[in-house]
Image (cartoon, rainbow, N blue to C red; front, side, top):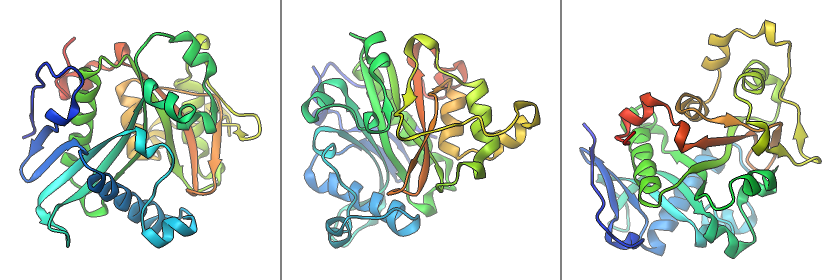
Length: 279
């Protein structure tokens, strides 16, 4: 059973509200120190560069951390296993999410997603809304078979969104590999059945644009297409997300990316109930 900690009136002070949910020895909370952020970066390096096929920079390889200019201004959501102690004596970070609000993005020249997608119409259409960019989601391999780990990340994410009155979340989510035809059915399904509303249309940058409509839609078996999607994308879809126009090949991370947008007002009833959100 997952227990959620109720936040108090903190006036935006996250340091007084670190723990968001617990389940047994696992807890989800926000990173409070540089050392905890670095632990998340080491987890990201292990998953993306050692387990998968991402290509690190020489400095990343030397430090065995995944990092970029966005990390210092982001909030980092961590799943901690209190029963698993690292060499430094601290509980292990076994899952993480990176979150960036608009006021933080302004400090580094914009959102990470803008490096792949033209999000100008989205930002204009939702001007004044509280937006949250999501990224760098990963869970240690041996914890992926435990639904609790991902549930805790989502619990923490929803608690964070509620605390800051987030109205919409967005970011890039990935299919493995750089050959979009390997995911033809899934990409085609998303293109036809989860398209963003025209007024907030987001499109891959012209020099990166890869068509998602890879095969005739009448040839797509819905069950097979959904089964072929990575769990995170499938979870976003079930929550009620919409998808941008065009995929992007990310050769550093060896992925095929799609743009994900989730309007909190359209968050599915099923997920609202699961994560304790009020209607």
